[in-house]
Image 1 (cartoon, rainbow, N blue to C red):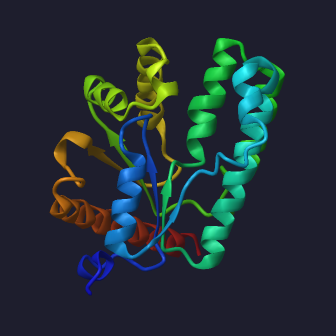
Image 2: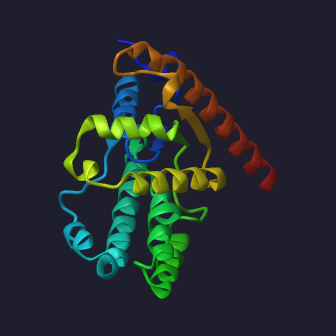
Length: 230
């Protein structure tokens, strides 16, 4: 069987992260790309999170603890992926925690200024350095708010159905603002209206072509930049 990485010359050691707001289809895209490329997947572990239930009971008391826990777990996972030698598709990036969730708690008053600055300082020291193994590519899934809201409503998760529409709109806007300023690694934006990988598996092919182009271009740029620095 010829996998997508051979057809489109995508390096076997590539690390690709999928980002986007709730309901945009990150898990579906992660599984589809991993299957096409014969890559491994990396999903967020929530069952073993000791702070999640406490956080939902008391945002102010536990928001800082939750974000520190997520930072530590994502950092360890990123380290594991690169030590393994790459070949992974990640569902959700380490960058969203600080750029969206921790920032939202701070701005809404459910995380103190001191806690937020402590968290942000730790994040910057751990992640925003040349020593941190950044992904080859971050794929940002986007679409209209109405389209995404329709997806959330159709999948029928009880907790999501009880969440006010205003919350989803705020999250949508925060993601849009975040990605417009994001520059920690190369970004490829995909509109969810442009493909249907559930009902049309062949629609993944055009995405693979774009991924190949982005990764080879970014690696060539990195090698050229390094040569100039010697």
